[in-house]
Length: 418
Image 1 (tube, helix red, strand yellow):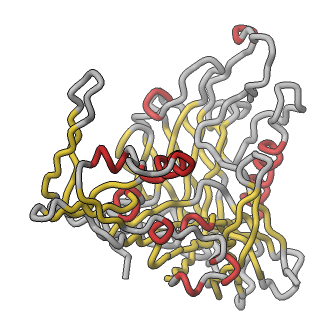
Image 2: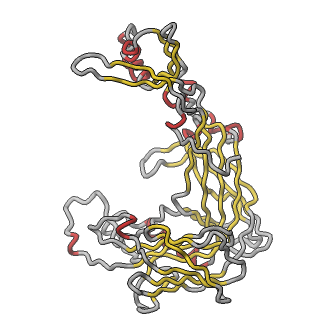
Image 3: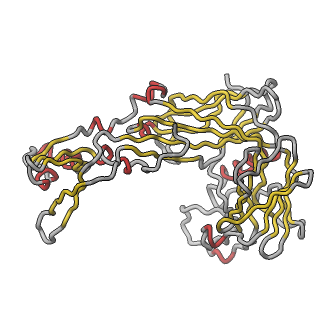
């Protein structure tokens, strides 16, 4: 039986539109009839981990304006954090609207912190004081087979749902927010040694295929991703403060088709009741913005206010949290066995081929019976040459996903990979 409660929120964007529109409108709307109020948006977090913490400052955009990081960035601001003893940590702008603390800065459990901002125009802002509470350790990360809806479409897909358990022995907090990062190790069975260069003579002439030696090692890649939504949990209704089966991330079965090792790291943030309530309000807003004529909840104001104009709205939140993380490495055999039946093994379905002769004949599927020609043409379109024997004029071909790992990831290996 599940203990505690959890909430999964939709994507949380750093720039907030004031009005939400859908693409289903029949008549064009005169955007000039909407009023626009330029508001400061603050996305800020500090924790008890020594690292460069980030404060991201932007402004809202008019409904007919462009939304990009450069035009909406609140650059040139003075940003710092103070604790309840008066200790100060200054943040330096690294690029448009993004301010970083020294990488040695870490909050201290039990201390209260407040954020100060003075914009380039001289406007002053301050957050309420937030207490830093130490986060308990994550007890376990595990996975189970699941079938989930795919986006907003009326279809479902099979995959793996990752969960965590938490035992809060200190009973220090009741509210949590979760983040995750993960990486797939991608190994290909037929690393290419030759690359095909195609020349198109023009007219009705067939293309000319030239095989050039390829010297880059493309046998091993890594595909990294990170959270794009917020997951919350609360143990407020649980007397022993334990949390079990908190769903963190769902991965489609197709993500594991050429993966040798998979790793996921979950970061747990112990947040205040006020921060938890703030994120819950965002959830309600996201759930009810499907139509222009839905009930409008207005701007969600966080814990930051203007020191010059108390009535001014400021969007965003200054989050102070204790942080704990846990990482696991999994072999495919450690996934829920039910998901294995849904994994498409591309390099087994598209087995390697040997072909002698002109590649035009291969891609035209010359000699294949007419009743099989359509399927064969579609299949051969995925094949590329990975090796070549010039003495026998033999081309060795395989599915492009099975010869060059860069089709599924990057050659750069994560620093943390074991």
